[in-house]
Image (cartoon, rainbow, N blue to C red; front, side, top):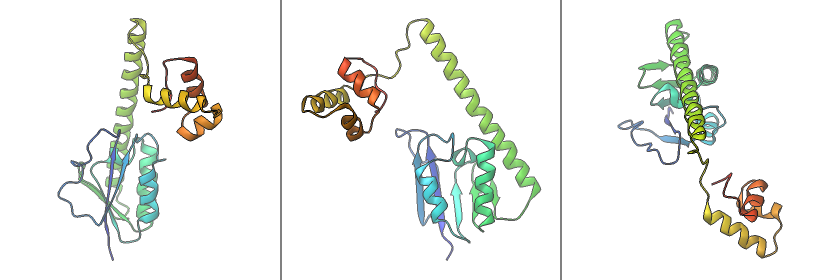
Length: 188
């Protein structure tokens, strides 16, 4: 039986997923709330394992599936070679395993555009940070006071630094900084 599967990706936890596949009847939806810089995403991995021949994967736009051309082409081939169709709504592209040179050209071009867009965003971000640092305004990530308090409490209860880092899921450097009173935090 053909399943209609949705794949949604937003770049951060705060972003809303509702707009991406509105009004599309789906049997199952996979949602990632992380960067699309690579394919190491939990929901994408689950989607790859879940989808079967005859299924249709619905995705709002190409950039939600992948942010670089190589990953995009690899994913589309991975699915279509298994008989799984893909629909990208924003670009009006459907891939059903039929080798269509025009569609492949469009996919490659759009993938390259999204990859270029990501590179430009990162370049602007680096430039902005450099300017802010030069003006003494860049402070890096803010302190997570609650985390620092938990680290200090656990340390006072006799746990060593490695045990604290493991229990809280953060780097040992974060534990050392918290215990030294440093304001930088490497995990949220």
